[in-house]
Length: 597
Image (tube, rainbow, N blue to C red; front, side):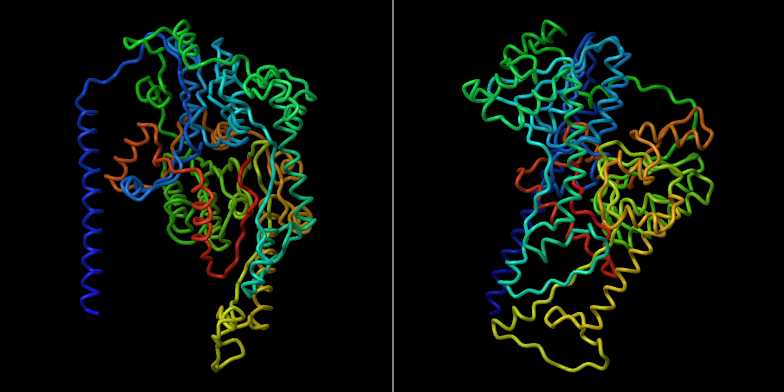
């Protein structure tokens, strides 16, 4: 046995040594590259060029502060692009005479969503108002990237590509039959007719309530998508609907040529090879010494072009609440402790006169949501106005932390609401019985051992858990009622866990205004009486080395992450959700359906 332990110990030591060697090697390579970057002669911008908006991976409000060295060695998530960087580059380029056109390069875009697209589209419209053209190019367009491309004056497509548009949907796996076969009892506690987060564990199909609610908000989003595309491209609704719903017939008419079908349907302007595209661009913006057309990526452009001079120290602080809400410290998400610390930093910074809370979250822990809300109330009590800007989603716990703001802004496509609470507790005593394992013993009270997963759920505990969930729901209603100047009974009618779009939420009184982050910032400045101000992003403080590496990766276009295969994305998302299920009372204000379309 001791010899066996020695073998495993030596293997473990070898693997640990190998890991350290790889980390040190990567670090040394990084230092070499950094040295070249610091001492090499800096690049300069061409006299005329295309500003390339080369969006990569996920478009987010805040880059994930993951450890880049660990990411490089152990793997990471999809690449990320910061939305505000894209908007800042476009706005700066609109008055730069060297910038001849804006190029939307969308081949590496993984997801942006309708809400963030609307904010980027507003910046594109400002650029077009300067009289400069906007071009979009990709080897192929999916539904997500095509909505953004439709804002361009000209859309180009590779002959081997196509435009795939399928509409919006909510499909989930249901596990009741599997759990029955495994003899696992899944006890669900919830309040809200439409709070369907736990349905997959207790049903074999979507409930009619959930089906009706999902059909309503998905239908609203699809109607908005259709109107935006047909308006941008000057298409008839009938032709667009035919391309989507009868794509088989459309392709048959063009001998299966997807690219030609998209061109004939006026979804794209020209089908060009890479050689044709390069030649066309050289004629429009010139070429460099290597014969490539003059283009500058927006990240490089931001680092090389002159930013507007700031003449004041008065600022609007911007806090980004992005991801799942969980207890304690969170690196990739919204931690009750860690995010509360950011709120306190904004409150204690005398240069910050008002705060915008940017939310992109479907919620999570009710305990952490309330912890953060209390810190936000303290910020308001310090005299600083608080304005919420809802991004792609601000639902359940995301709405919990938004409810008491002085103003709430959302985009028409924001997913919000989902005001409801749930909890769940699985027991596996029947599974154990099947393999011959029994559980027995004694306790000193009626509830002792009542939360053991290897015993049937104690009826007293079961009733207590449901009572706690109902109390949490009433608390949620009262929070919203107080923040939105409504009665709890009024909130209850539009709550019940139901999901709403930003447009509907405004009509229902859950949202004050429709607009993006820039609109919310302007409003926050106005509430603080500021006419001259700057924006300050209040972000987590990284260790110096990690911050340095993160900055290097961001400038290289990788964000703070590296790319992984697409199949890992849902696995990683499920893992993050499970990690966040640590609420002390087992109560969650979380919207499963609220992944942004």
